[in-house]
Length: 211
Image 1 (tube, rainbow, N blue to C red):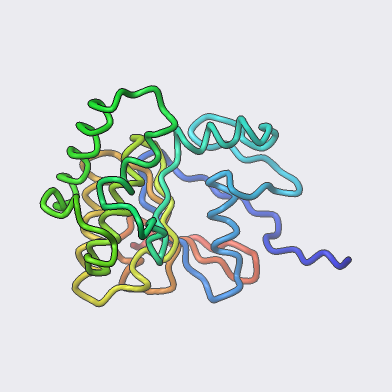
Image 2 (cartoon, rainbow, N blue to C red):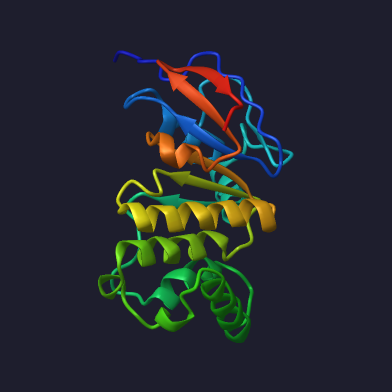
């Protein structure tokens, strides 16, 4: 079996509270790097320190628990459960916690209010626009109060106005809530919403702090 290296000798330091846009052509390793930082994939060598935790050698169960408590995920195609309402989709990560039903409901209502969807909480994904579905996904990412939000092409499936709304929301989360955000994008306009950019080309990083 042939081994194909995706990332080569990567060193990346991201400050707490930063908003990084990770750019690069298709196949450059952007999503792989994002998955490594989020604890989805494991590196073949090197170390990964995220939020003060060395996650490199955690057991699978420990890594799953770490992800659940520290990382919020936002995807291009929302990844919502179609048979669940907006409320139920956002509540889903809390089902693994010890919160009571009343505590879960209060937290979900609060977070849906933060993304301006309090009046849509009983709607199913098929009854929501793309921008609204992505806001549900953002609410789900926020529900466990993670220190890190990873967003993989979060505006890639949205029209210009909906994309601008999502980018403004991410900026507010970074600026007002202090969330550290790493966003993979191929869109230069979306990348300009971040504080800084990192370009990935053939598995190698180039930094650009001009964003």
